[in-house]
Length: 553
View 1 (tube, rainbow, N blue to C red):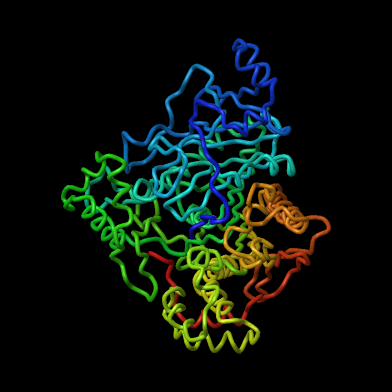
View 2 (view 1 turned 90 degrees about the horizontal axis):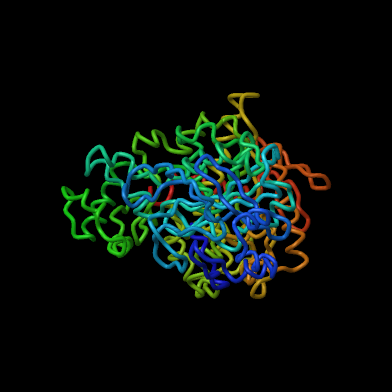
């Protein structure tokens, strides 16, 4: 679940102490001149909000008040691999003008630091009593990469369009967030496999305690996230420490059926420690090593080889069934009872793997029939006869090319399968509880991007610019075509409605009814959006014949 996009260079970032070029242009000459004015004049020109930890100063951009790099947690480096702590209070007014550092990671060009617990707020008006719905976005990148600072996550247009408050955030990733030392390094590290999840919990505490001062309603907090962000939300649905901190949830191509078991997580920790040159009895020394050394060992070969295709290459990082933070699998053996009352959207794109696999392996777009079975065996991540799969897809879709079959089958068996399982678990829960359970809404994005001649169709990450109404971001996968803007209107309006009421239905759109086991109702987002029953049902039934375990767990 890697949302990396090969279509544009990542936007360059700046430190907390300076303004990036885009912001300076947006502020204009008047704001630039204000940099030389006394503190009192500055305060009159720019919004200042008092949080429970201290005052922060933001800016105005396109009619929205923007606060970037607000600290929600203390520097994690003194307590590496341990639960986060709230920040120390401050007395001066802290500038919230530029994004905070991302968690240390590989293949990333933003400023990075273990001091990474920062969030960003976009609001129509930072004023108590606004009572606006709050939309908290959790970024993707599996549990290893990314930040809340990507240009696609800019909340300006969403806040303006829906009169909502938008929040994005950074948190600990990879080994910093999920190295499980609970069985190796003693009681101080019993929660180490899930401290990245505890960072999210701390951020949600900040939202609960502070968002009213930014015009938001702490009783209407919606989580939404794509890819790894959706998986993190699914994990939070079953995390006791998160209970009561959010009230709606929407996952976009991101699921977490099972977590890593403690024995698998310990095996991975031992492999990681070996790559660091540490014996298991010296595990606690990892807390004192330089960041660069920790990063260098992240891609050690994963020791867990179970179900076909489960080998990850590099080490898997993700939530751990540690009986401390997480005492049950997120969506196994059923949907978590603690979140039964939370309305949920579960969505995927029709052609997930055209980017997930095809984005890094162009040869998959020109396959011959005799190449498909071996590639399916490698990429489906379930133990099923690939020749049978090819034959069934050729029967179902006689016009499909070998590459079409490969992408469709890997999407259904690898990416879509977990979404179906979560929707089924929620539907079964609703059937058992009746009125005591909240609705679950399913969607499938069918609209295909015109990018690169349409080769990507509806791939992984396409729903991000549509939900954020950010199709105009340079080189966005969606493009900024009239059709893309129409799709952005439909998807962003549905998510805004869901944030406001817990129901995604909007005026003029087809009626979107909850997902049930009898109907498998699914909103198909396209230029002719429509509600379908059990779309791709034959593909679903094909893969339902074999067991499924979340990749890496």
